[in-house]
Length: 376
Image 1 (cartoon, one colour):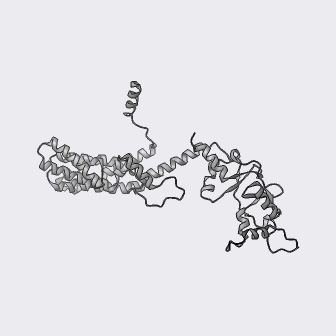
Image 2 (spheres, rainbow, N blue to C red):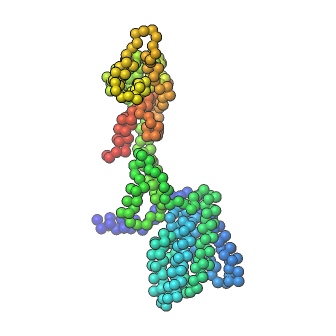
Image 3 (cartoon, rainbow, N blue to C red):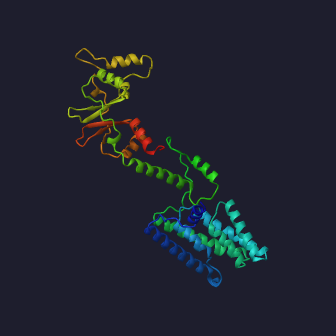
C-alpha cells in the first residue's frame, strides 16, 4: 500500500500530455518572438537617452507566454497583463522604499501584489515577478511603474491583440458570455458557478470555455457510446402502415387498437409517401371550442355514404407529405438533432431499396440512449 501511495504521489510530479499540435506551437512561438521584438524596439526608441537604464522588464517574457501561448486564459487577458504588472510594480516600488531588508521586502511585495491582483481582478503570475524585480533592483521612483512596466505591458497586449486576431485566436477572450440556457440543457451557468465555488481554487480557464468543453465532452461521449448503434438495431421491425386510400375510420381504429400515435403511409411498393399522426386528425377539427370534441372526431372519421363529400375521407387527404426518413444503416447518434431540436416524434426507417423497414419513436430512442449512456 505504501509503495502504491508513493507511485501515486510520484505521478503528480509528471507533466501531462500536450494537447496542441505542431502548428499551434509554432503559432505561439512566432507570436511571442514578434510581440517581444516589437515591444522591445518601441520601448528602446521611447527611452531615448535613457536607453542605458531599464527599458524592458524580465517579467514580460512570462507575460508573452500567456498572451501568445494561452490567449484564452483569464490570466492572459489585457487587464490581467496591464493591471497585474503595473499594480505589482507599484507595490514592489513601495516595498523598496519602505522596507530596508531586501529579503523581507521581496516577501512582503510579492504577497501584497498577489492580494492586490486578487482584489483588482487582474491576477497575472508575472505580476509577482514584477514586484520582486522592483525590490531586487531597488527601484524607488514610482514613475518606473509607468515606464517601463505599464508601457511594456500595454505594447505587448496590443501586439497580442493584432497577432492573435490575425492567426484565428480570440483575444481579448470574453470570460463570461451572457446567454440564456437552453430549455433542455443538462446544466446551467449557475450550476458551474456552484461547483467552482465548492472547488475554491483559481482555474486557468474561463467559465464560458469550461461550459463549452463540458458540452463537447458530453457530445463526444454520446458519439463514442452510441456510434456502434444503427437504426436497424433499435427500430420496430414490423411497423404498422397504411396506404393513401385507407379510410380515416380504419386508420384511427388501427392506431387506437395498436396504441400508436403515427402511421407511415406507403405506396404499393412499400415506399414511404407520407405519415399520418393523431395531430393530423385533430387538425381537421374546430378546436376553438373544446365542447363536443369526441363527437367532432366521430363525424370526421365516419365514412360518407354519398358520392360527393366536403370532408376528408382517406388518410392521403390529411397526411403530412414531407416526412423525414432514415436508412436502416444510419448511426443512431445522427437522430439526436431530429428528436431533440427538429420536433420529430416518429421516424420511418427504410432499407437499401427505400422501402419501409421499421419505425423509431422517441421512446425507442430514449431507451437506446439510456442503455448506451446510462448507469451500468
